[in-house]
Length: 97
Image: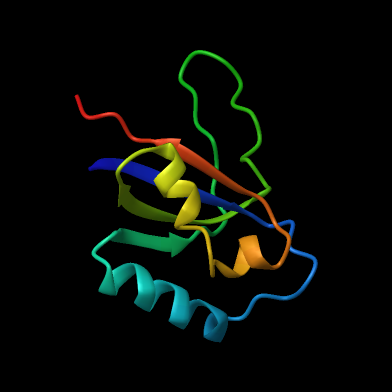
């Protein structure tokens, strides 16, 4: 299994509530795919040698999962409130060093 991070964008047309997440997260937990996750709050970018850019404002949360490959990770989006609400989710592999 490979590690992936699902980065949720805040471009959902409908309001997603905390209650919408329960069934999806329970499914990931039951199948052993979830590693963790959280909403993402405000913050800053920091750079030592140059002015730092603004934070990436379109990200609202993340979920770390395990999947066989990228296609499997994409199939695990079924039921995700952001995905089902028409929003965008970035799927990124987390390479092991």
